[in-house]
Image 1 (cartoon, rainbow, N blue to C red):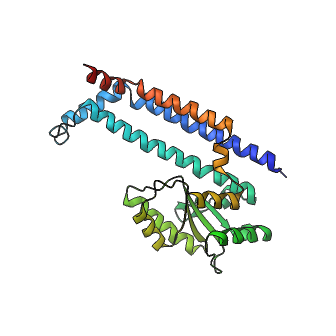
Image 2: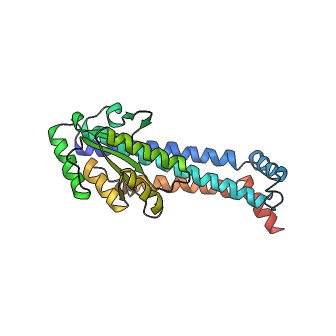
Image 3: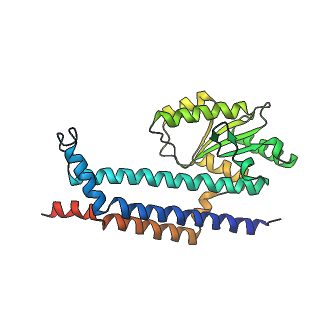
Length: 260
């Protein structure tokens, strides 16, 4: 059996692997999207558009705005993937679950983490119930928990919300207590959360979500992120991404225009 130190080392290594993969992907995206070919394509599309051109948005500055917006969305998605996969790996190791058990398919949708009591030991069932009851009211009729995880929560389309509403129905139909963890405190949209609460989700946001994950899985993402080697890696990679944006063709065209 893996001891606590070895397990922590495994988690950190998994985190670093995921971090490097996704941040390298972001660097590649900058090199592609902010290139001369991409920039000129975007500008030409705006110039021939009957709406954008009439409103004077067929400009290098607005091209840069569009590219930066896409970059922001991509960063959010990649951070989301990191925050989805690491807790799932930890949960599988902590409770001795297979990939199919820890991330079950409920109809056509994949749940981030599912802990069915039929898959757990008696001791683990007691642990799950005790942990949940510290934060929420655990329903006696529930046969486990179904957890969705987001590093932030700012859905910008109704399709995303409909999917989460449908997932709540599937989780409840499977006899699981729906729990929604959001780690960021600056992004949640109250109206979207209210809608999903009506659908059956129980929300834990910010420190409550972090503490819950720490208690349930033995995972402290904040502590991992503060590790000197990981913090150094993040700062180095993000600095490289920001520098690549600033030195890109797209960015330099706009700077040159305003220096004339």
